Amino acid sequence: GDVDDDEDNEQQEEEDDRKSVEGDSLITRTQWAEGLREILGLEIPFIFLQSLLGLPANGHRGKTHGSFSYVAWLAKFAPVHLQINSTSFHTQGPPPKLEETLDKIA
Image (cartoon, rainbow, N blue to C red; front, side):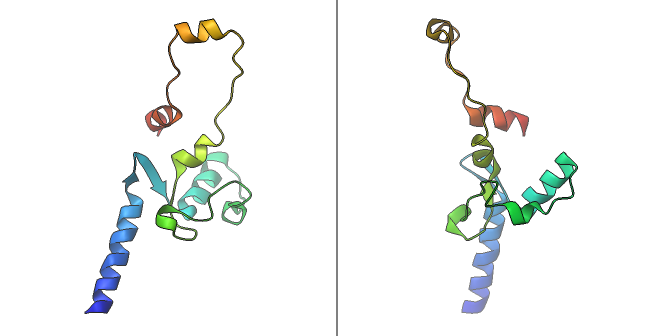
């Protein structure tokens, strides 16, 4: 019935959220917090700091506190370099896109 259809749709959305969107991997906020704790080796409740650390209030498909693209989140922290000599920059060609670089790392 309708209840089963709603449950199936919700399960499909959750599965889709775990998959890639426009080439960016989606993660849950719990995965993000656990990853920070593991990588940084700090026992900090990152989940409570998500808005302070720049996580979007709405995740994929506008779902409040839903899964989000970690590549898009990391892009906020990309280093910015001032171009000292504009001619030397252009002889080397354009820099790779941040998303391409992060996808290679991930």
